[in-house]
Image 1 (cartoon, rainbow, N blue to C red):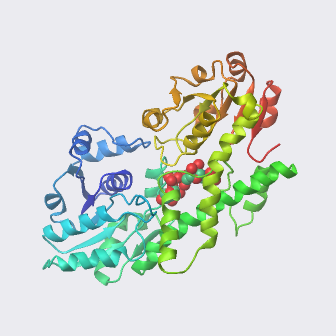
Image 2 (image 1 turned 120 degrees about the horizontal axis):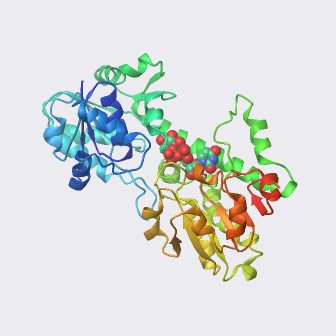
Image 3 (image 1 turned 180 degrees about the horizontal axis):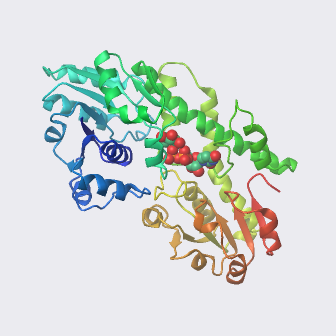
Length: 436
Ligand code: UDX
């Protein structure tokens, strides 16, 4: 079948490439001419493991192509996905739907056959109704259905997540919508990924509820970690202990510097706005958002404490290892490293940093930080080494060399990637999250 993917960002490009790999004929559309030009040359706009290979392979077979021409791209497509961004609107935290609605208008104006229009972008409850209204207002003579199909893929594991999802959620109001979507995902039924058909509004809410729940789980264990430090318990044991209860589950219980990224911060805020609009408060999520925000700066203060407190810290130098919000991505959006660096800078601490993929994007966001070519360059002369992102490259640092290069053997491990006894045995003052 022919699929059009409007928006060739993270979700659009990964979904488009995977659908092509399933055997569909896919056109990825984007307004950004330079992005499309680069895709034609095989240059990916984002860093995602395996994506360049997957795109290259499917372009070669002719199943995947790119264009800036929406009318041409959607011609003959039975499913037209909207996968454009829905950033937080400046000022009020509402999801900015202007890109989604602009695409709906354009699709309405150029629809040349019957088709299902699918919102894959994360959109608040009721957006599907508005997209449907826009298409109706366009006066198109063709039969269409508007379906919600939220995407749950994680950055860094996007292809695997897309191809082997825990579930596929389809929010459709008509048989036509359900039929076409069944065909779109038929290759995945063969993999036995469960598919759930729901109403469109339920599907829209599922996405926000899932992200808010995961953000809550992380925030819960982060606060438990703080308590562990006070009472002398070990948060990793607590995670394992509670996570082996099937009702809780072991995943997303790693304590750390607070969640970041392109989804959790924006989607929790947007959920709060929906709750406010409908006068149905979600107080738990309100607390999660606040707690996570303040945690990021608190992590900066943790580093300052390891330097001996604010007075001792002034004029000292910290090596920051890891800047991206998580490993295997170059994404800096809402990364805890930004708040950590700001807090250190405000306290008069100078910062040299290394990140395997994120430095180019990080540099303009963190003008107070000097980017280095190698972790050991950043460590040279540092009064403390702070691990902010758990890149594999930092899991096996040569501790002897670190000690020789650093000005003082102090390590703050905000991701718990080392065993305290190993680092202490190597002669370091070591602090981590929720462990003494
Ligand atoms: C998330 C959701 O997982 C995904 O389903 C949704 O489609 C988009 O948002 P992503 O933003 O790629 O995906 O990252 P994820 O791996 O979920 O991590 C989010 C944040 O939580 C990161 O900052 C990560 O470091 C943090 N995290 C995650 C923890 O601090 N502890 C954990 O146990 C898990």
